[in-house]
Length: 248
Ligand code: GTP
Ligand code: MG
Image 1 (cartoon, helix red, strand yellow):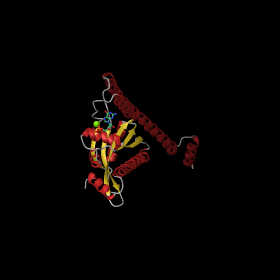
Image 2: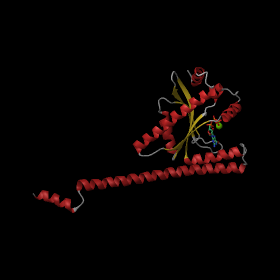
Image 3: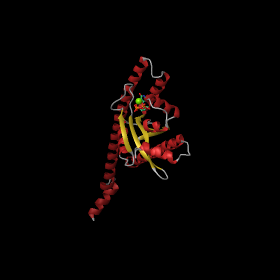
């Protein structure tokens, strides 16, 4: 049974409860599931590599007003069935990383979760939007285990760097302020900023790589010193003991 049909079956089984509340309950459960998965992946990464790929996570449920607006924009009547079928971002998770490389690492880890189904991927980092928008989008479905059924529920995951997030939140404010018709010089400045964001992300990534290299060199040097101290011995005290041993 497809996710939409499972939701419809769940709605029927709770017919004495408001359908809207049932649907929101499912999407909230899906957000919790995905949020926990991401936290565990982050902790595992910290455990193994001593490093957090995730800076922070934000989750949200789309407001009823935005759901209705989106259905109208798509040309569908307002109904619970249509919203479950056609609105993919009712449950949204935004994952903010420090570096672009973390985004792809994380996307791969998400893709490897055997209970998650990846329904679609939009890579607006390799293919930015006209506006300059960059982000990595994954539409996934996560099984929600209810008392007598399982419902696959959709969650939109947006993964981006801190710099991309900074740009997107400002662009969003401007878009709303001008209702999508911002003056050309503002759109142009935004596109320029998007370029600067990409340059900053690249610079920060190579800087981080240089730092990591330095740390590794330092660690190797420290290790070498430890080896020298422990095996060969460094002080005259140790040497004289050895000689004393030979002399015996
Ligand atoms: P909607 O744009 O949501 O109707 O659906 P879609 O199927 O076109 O999805 P898309 O992946 O293009 O965008 C989904 C979400 O990404 C949006 O709801 C925003 O949160 C974000 N997004 C997409 N484009 C832009 C953009 O140009 N600027 C900003 N700030 N956010 C964007
Ligand atoms: Mg869109």
